[in-house]
Image (tube, rainbow, N blue to C red):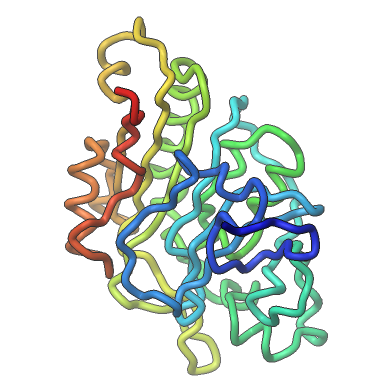
Length: 284
């Protein structure tokens, strides 16, 4: 049995349950199963001001998150203004702070930081892409929870037209649905598939570009009197969309359909599962 002690608090962890409250951002405290890249992937407990905010599975080779898992907070959908972008110090060095930190000026940035993760300069000369959050600011309520979404370890390059069009519309659709009909906790996991394309800078591959974006939510305690067109999308439902300028509609699908779609596009095994027991309580 793992015994949590204060000095063991850290951002990059072996398992999400190795930090108190980090597993709380996943249904039953269990992350998606079936990812095959093993020890090459980094599990991040995203900590800001000494409190966990959400969790991320990160690919340090492609400098991109594979998914972020968070709990949805009822909100009005307002987006923060002028938030500073942050990075994960422990991706660069296990001896660094467990808290995400604001990026230093380029002249002060050490090589190990740039080798371990994306940096702001990677997005400078690629105007077709914007920094798309997996855990979006608009799905959080408290100022620090919103601020914590502005870490580049929670960001992938999204085609501008997709980010501001179909994807933004879907994020708001889910926000309104969960606001109106989810009675208890809503667990959300948003991730990517990649065909291997990269943002390049200085003749080097720097940041993986998603082929598809996907997302799913799990809300076991919901309004059983909701209109049918909303009710049948509970307790669990998913969606995916092509990260492109065209043919980029976000398609809502049952969770099993989403998992089948993703199995052919991600490095996962045949038992790949987004939510433990497909978001069905053990006592049912």
